[in-house]
Each structure stands twice: as structure tokens, then as C-alpha cells.
Image 1: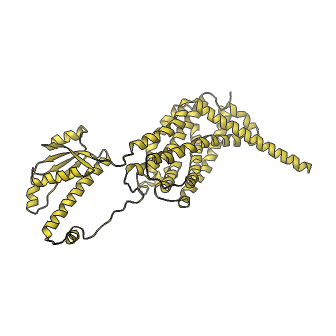
Image 2 (image 1 turned 180 degrees about the vertical axis):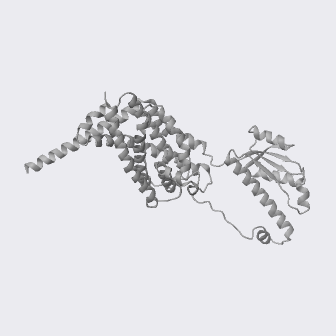
Image 3 (image 1 turned 90 degrees about the horizontal axis):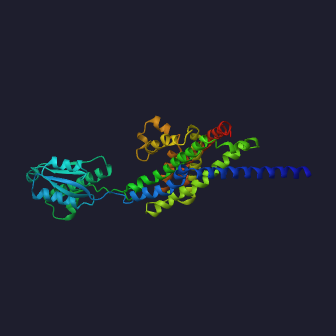
Length: 404
């Protein structure tokens, strides 16, 4: 009986010592991060403010009244009617009337107009002869949203003009006959998931999840780069001489960043889109189910990556440029089916790929946690792999750079 009590006392003492050592590392991680202005910027300021800026920029969702220049060489009632109906669309605004195509091109070059509509001289003549006529539309494709607005607006007006000509020539007597003449097959377009057709609802969920990974890579990289420069790992050296000391260090580090980033990720992914009225179908339980493995994988890969950052400034050169490629490889802004196989393999190395896919399904497509088992499984596998590499990196940091 006395032996059992002694064993229980030893176990309790071990648990208490483990908790104290873990809490000590936890507090040290937060203190070191708060001492570095760069780490504070990326770990706290950017997650708080950048989503607000990004959401505010894309809050209008779609572009309206894109300025276009018109070159009307026909000067006819028919051409003026076409131009007037283009101006009446919500997508375009006829801002300039030019006498030549060169004048209109100059306006596009100056950024005053985003496209040109050219009405040929024989526009009305060919329509009167029942011949096919052409309207030339020139779009500035540097901005795809403005190109889409101009092109679709002109297509809609051209289709409506053709429908009116059809009904006039058909000799119908009822509106139903006119409808069958112009639309023998009635196609109903239903937008799935992104019901507003807006750019914000399309891209914002992916960007917010990617931000969490990037700020952890930058913040932890800057924090540990500073500690490399100043031998800041010396305080952790005594812990390695205790039982499960390395486990204490890893647990404290992980909990420090997890408790910091989980509220910030909730702010970025849930609160900010709600403030700006973006579409959200995610439930808190499903969000936590995805957020925990995603943040753990991001923390472990950031600790692993920090071994390559021996100076705090280097992390900017190594991480910032990866944001756009990672967004493309995630399968959001470019179809994943069209991504080359080699780049798919590269994308599987980063938690953002599975985190973005899972969050978009939960947030925009009405899925639940049971529908994203493949993404959750991949994230947990990344957690195990990067936890092992992060543990090795942590041991080498303390043993090699933990000398006062």
C-alpha cells in the first residue's frame, strides 16, 4: 500500500513538473515574440488589420459602370440605340465618344477608359439589307473583372438586338410565339455556392486561410531568427536534462502559438467576413475541427522552416514571394485539375492547400466536417510529419545555439 502511494506521488510530481516546465516554455515563447517588433507585426497586427483592409477593398463584390469609349462611324439611329442600351447596362458606362479608333486607344492607354466599342460605317446599312453586321469590342484584359463586365455587357445587348430582329421578321401574332422564336430552349442559369457572383465571396475565404499560414511562417521565422542572433535558446538548455524535457519544450511552443492564433483565425475567418456581409455557411464546431489540425500543421512547419532562418531579415525573402504560388496551387484561383502533377505534389507539402480546400467547402459550399474527411486526414498526417521534423529542429536549436 505504501509502495502504491509512493508511485502515485512520483507520478503526480512528474505531472506537476511537466506542467510547470511546459507553462514556463509557453510564457517564454510569448515573451520573446512580444519583444520583437517584427514578430508582433506579423503575429498580431497583420491578422487583426489586413483582413479588414482586404474585405473592405472587395466589399463591392462586382464591378459596375466600367468606363468605355465609343467610336460611332455609322452615326445612325441603329448604332445610337446599340450604344444607348450598352450605357443602360449596370456593367458599363459610355464615358467618351471618339471620332477615331486611335483617339479611343489613347484614352485606354491613359487609363481613362477600360475598353472601346467600335460601330462600323455599314452597321445600319447591313441591318437594313438583312445582312450580318459586326460590332468590334476592344477590352483591356489587364484587369479580368473589367474585361468580363464589358464583354458580357456587349454580348447581352447584341443578343437582345438579334432577338428583336427575329421577332420582327417572324410575323408572330402573340408574345408567346415571339418567346418561342427567340428562345426555343429556355436555359436557366443557376449560380452554385457563390450566389452573388462576387469576387469577394469567391477569393476571400482562401486568402484568409492562407494569411494564417504565412503570418506564422513570418512571425516564427523572425522570432527564432532574432534568437539565433542573440543565443536566445540558452534558457531552454536546462530543460533537456529533465525527463521529457524536449516534449515540454515542444508542447510549450505549440500551445503558445496555438492559443495566440486560434482566436486570431476566428477573427479573420468568421468575424471579419460577417462584418462585411460575405456569404458564410460554416458552423463553429466544424470550424474548430478544421482549425486545430490546420494551425498545428502551420506551427510545426514554421518551426521546421525556422532552422533555415539564421537572420531575422532572411525570412522576408524566403516566405513573402510564396503567397501567390500557394494560392494558385490550392486549386481556388486556378482549377486544380489543370495544375501539372509536379506542382500538385509540391502543393501537398503545405497545410494551406488542404486548409483552403476544407474551409471553402465548409464556408461557401454548405459542407460539414464529415464531408472534408480527406482534407482533415491530410492535415493530421502533416501534423505528425512536421511535428517530428520540428522536434528535431528544436533539439538542434537548443544543443547547437543554446550556449550562453
